[in-house]
Length: 178
Image 1 (tube, rainbow, N blue to C red):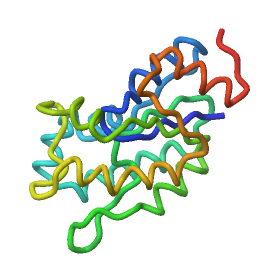
Image 2: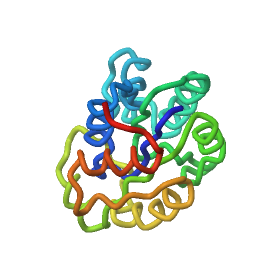
Image 3: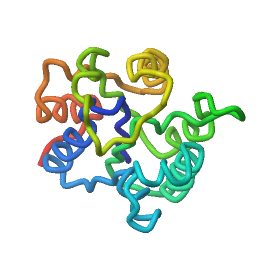
């Protein structure tokens, strides 16, 4: 079985995935880390600057295709994993990636409030701009319902430590920590 963590950038997916791994010895696979590797080491902001968001969303799809037969991993997904771009560059729900994710494992949405998310990522230069014209708040307003609908399980992290979050996910899955 695979555990898939989704949510907005800044939600805590990487921290919770590492805590889950520590409690279970299940390895973590990060879609963003694989993307950097597949791009020849080019950091995501530079990849997006050079090739655009559409190319990055296609790269994510390619990564999920490669992970289709994985078993026994925790998949830490980038914040935009559920999205693609339409022909004029607007963000849309990615049915192709959602179907792959559902075939790969159980999807856990790590939820935080919009204000908390906006504050957490403010000024973070390791994350590329999602849009030159749309604020992160506006993007979140569109994305959060999509995360909720895609998930098998939702967990609000606002008042939980990463360890508590990992324990709740394991309880939901009926798994025990080591």
